[in-house]
Length: 99
Image (cartoon, rainbow, N blue to C red; front, side):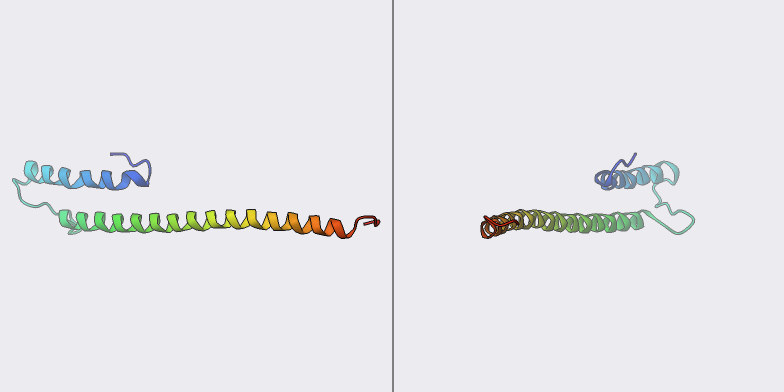
């Protein structure tokens, strides 16, 4: 159950409830297990769902960032073209001068 990236967090977290149920069946004769802090299987599912929501939120923000970065690249290319045009016009004004 190694987690190598954020893409493996939820699949790994999905393995825990099944293991917990197997442990309950083998060790507690089907009774729901609770660890000393009062944490149980349903609490684990709530945390997994919260983690999924957080990962979805991060992915949405990352997608927004990629869109903005792509837009900046397009603007930079357009600005470069405008600067090139401006410089060529300025060069035309200074033909036959020392500048």
